[in-house]
Length: 286
Image 1 (cartoon, helix red, strand yellow):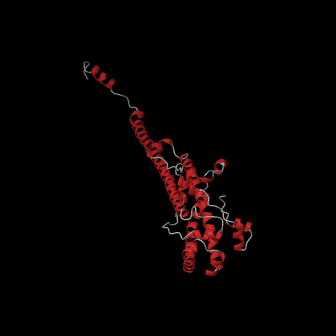
Image 2 (tube, helix red, strand yellow; image 1 turned 180 degrees about the vertical axis):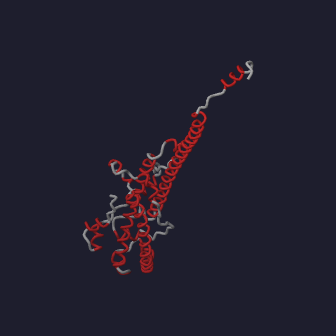
Image 3 (cartoon, rainbow, N blue to C red; image 1 turned 90 degrees about the horizontal axis):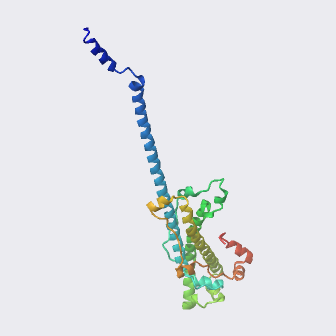
């Protein structure tokens, strides 16, 4: 190599970078791994956000579905009660004759209680366990009692029809106005009429108590539900349905309990003590 070229060669070789294992091998691997990790983190938080959002939307829907279900049940019971509201005295004979057959298209409720699992309080949360509408057994009882009452009214109507037909046949328009005990028992089998009387009083009592129970549910449950939903979700995905009967005087009147039957007279007819009859008609909502 000529002396003139040698300095140029050395200068070029000095510009050549030395081998760097980190830069040449590890850096590409770390860069790729970091990109994958970043993608995973972004995907994780995106999925978590979407799941949380869907959970919030599902809870809003569940609460509103239950409010609509309760409102429908309440409306059905109030419609049934409207048939005899304002007509009841204390005499069990008068009450039975004043309560006509109930014609309705109401169906039994078939619900999925597991949809409310998010409101169940933790075992260690004693304070929340005292909130009755966070107790699924209480909600289940409300639904089962509603279905039972619908069956009870249907059974009463089934028994009442032939008795009504016989009384109308024997006494005409007086049948549901002025006939007395002796006339009734002369026209129809006393035991059959007393069964009808018993069903009538049970139906009236249970209907009154359950209307009040459902009203309490519709008043309290929305606030319980809201405590499990963040405000942003409420703003973005619609409000929770709430309930108020204020201003609806007719409805407020129908919600009030019916006049109480003369339990002493009823007990005498049923062949029981007054205490026994009162106990049998107790619903647990008193």
